[in-house]
Length: 539
Image (cartoon, rainbow, N blue to C red; front, top):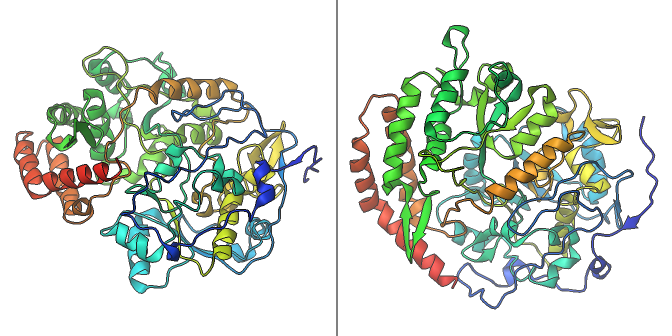
């Protein structure tokens, strides 16, 4: 049965929404290039949503708001459904929905509220880059495009997409009040050489965490939020959780991308690129990376990783769910996802220690959003761009609103219901909710909220409050290097191949020094110089 909404409040997210057309929006065709001086351009104003008071407030460092319950009834944003506009199209990542949009009530409701017969093509993540490049080469771009890293990206953005730097500058953004709730760190995701070229999907910059099946650790007398003192404790944990006779292994996932990265983090290696004065230095040349290779190779060769970790790393979630691997290194958002989908796991996070002891390792921080932002193709007029941004603002509706439920959960009675006042997906119905479109600024990954789990929300908030202020950033974030996207890209596969061979014991770790020197001479020094130039141009 559908719950009747008693509109105790019909409110907008900001008083400025009454002046929707007060500020003219300049289209991408009107000016702005990746080389423009942005020193005098204000960043978008940050106006937090005040319609719902968080139980645990976030802060400007990237710690996000925590909520113990969903408002009853939800706050209803004024102005919806939006006025009808001509169809917008999109190219987005995502598996095709289990029910086609043409016959899916969730999509029908979404389009009604957006005032637009939105049409999208969703491509699975492993095939998206190829589809993106083919679409760009074909010259027929949709209105919304998920931008991924490719060669000559600044030139592509200037030619085909809308520069939003001035469009959203300062108080201009307040006519899109959901977008105004984004922080400047969120907007950094969509900045290329100082200009804002699209819409981010906000997330906390927490990087990756080591998830633990608390129910399985309990069988060994361990807690899901176990504190480790050093690298030896880490290896001892892997040994304790591995039982090869029963086909149980401590961890799965690609050892080069997950385990080795975690060990580098514990060793204190740079998070990709670091700055030493004005100079950029890469983890490839760091001594800690050699030490990490040595220790990670011992772990792999001791048999603590799933035997198919190299050949079939994509099974890591299935292994975790099946109890074959009690540990799983993933992005922070998966902590909440597993807590909601499998509460019986008692999923916790084990903070990685410094390898030689002395407290928790400095976490590798990611960007404050999903890595691929959404570009808006140059529109025919300012009004057409405004229509596109109003739809984005709908998708970005904050936690606590009815519109947030539309995007995050779908349609009440169709994909979710309220249980004890909290929105809960109906059995096997989550796959019928929106696919792809949440990447266009939606906030479900930018809030701490697990129905009925105040204790977990408190733990997550405490984790972020410790990890983010003390984390390690990648100094290249927001800077573009043509060499990195061009010739440098070919070195990625060579690096992974060598790391794999060293981890498996097929090659000695001494080969890393020669690889690092060749990389530096061929592309590393050039990338560092380009990053230094890009940083200097931003002041």
